[in-house]
Image (tube, rainbow, N blue to C red):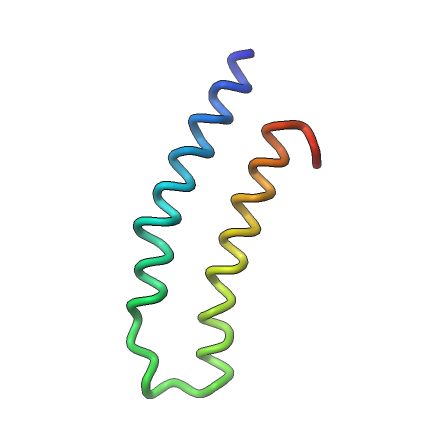
Amino acid sequence: MANFIMGIISLTIGVVILANVFIATVKDQNTSTWSTAEIALWGLLTLVSIAGILYGVLNVFGLN
């Protein structure tokens, strides 16, 4: 039971940091002088980070 509670706490902290810090930093980056490929890869960071949080949720609930 303690591992489950720690998993929920870790996910909560991870989601808050992801939403308020990481995604905001990625989206506020000035990409006006970047190539199209660089902008596409930079935009992919948000999708990969959300997939990582989803994997963490599945792991906590034992669904992976």
